[in-house]
Image 1: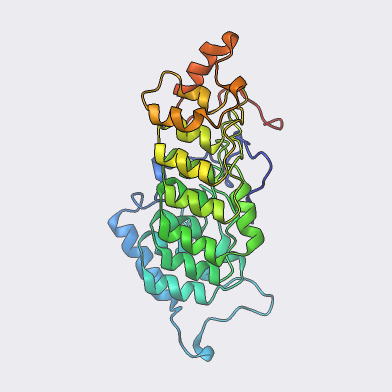
Image 2: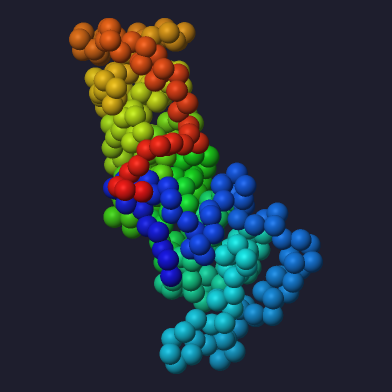
Length: 318
């Protein structure tokens, strides 16, 4: 099984393809992992197949056993052309009874970590479809929350991007501590960690929770070295700036281009943010470097979200 786990190291392997050798599709093209790809008759066939499996909670003597060699039950090996297992499909269609039954008979097995052609695990899809209860069942069943999809996102990254507090809470409260620290420290293929994503989209509650859980408040984006505080200034989010400063963000931290958060206030309308940062910023970091003023202005207005690519950049030989 080809499992892709998160790492605190750089993960920007842009040339990697899906496990079947097919080019990975974008999230926009198939975020629902095949929800729209099934025709009605195909969906009915899948539903009939799930019913045929009869994985309901029967007495042990009536359950389909694992054979003596320890091989998976036949239904666990069935996948669609998009790499989805029956559990993936049940989560996509929110078939709660089937989800529960399949997880119950698959606890602490690799089946719960199966990745489709977009490298999405069942846990990824549970977050995408906003099913916090399914997230909890999967984690209790022993799934791995550190696996990444073809964007380098763990399920927690996705929850932070979309402000999904219920799924965020379930994941952070139910995964092992070492897994949580690993996930919070990891960067996706756009060079952003969970704190960066929550900051870009202005989810103050998630930002506060991440910092309280141990996320590095001064961690820099891998794209250009901006911290969460830089991103808050970029977004002109006064409340977020105040929250980050209160939580201990460094106002004198510099981007890869040598710019402080205060530098990014130049040419911006929010004078309150400028005032918040002025007294906290080292005097030597208040004036824009003359030779780089134009670069700073471009950096300040650059798109901050995680959809921007990395054209012509190679990381670790990829």
